[in-house]
Image (tube, rainbow over all chains, first blue to last red; front, side, top):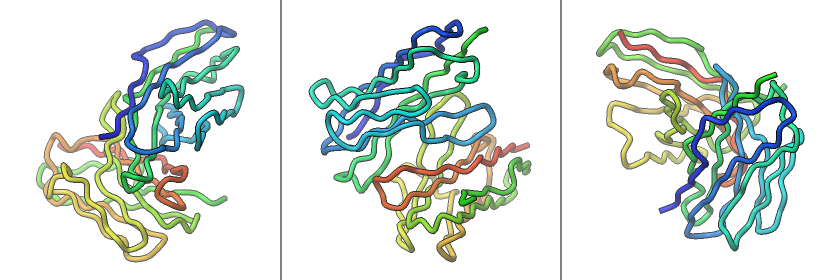
Length: 113
Length: 112
């Protein structure tokens, strides 16, 4: 079945540091890939997405590129802020699996001033 | 603003006392989902509706039921809550089954 593996957390960075959160996936078809962010006490929000190989999703300084050859969708940001502190979930949605979404376990990011 | 609304945000119930959580959407999306999220874990899909078609996950306990009386509303019924059902319950919608999901703020359920 489909699965998503995320880099284990928690991750603690200083403000303006470079961020990478690794995500790899297995899927039977050609999934769409997503990064969601969850702030404390809130639901998940879409951060960015990519629907086909080599697509780059970007939003709020975050980027991730759909790499079919390495089945990866790593999240990066060049300079993190305290306000980026949250839990980040990598997810896929597979059309060949009735569109069911599969989420990674989440990575908690804490950015210190 | 179009959105996904969940009520209540916090719900306290007693062991074995039925409880209903509600979700509404103004996005006019076809698909509505219910997830259970326990602390520091990924959301776990319980079931979803594509329009009126109900899709139950194989490992969702029978204790959990759902209703979707119209496009805008979806309910999660827990018939006999146990202590292990204490969690955040997230409702989400999407236009199609592989599209971006839009999440509500969640309802945190406490079982005493």
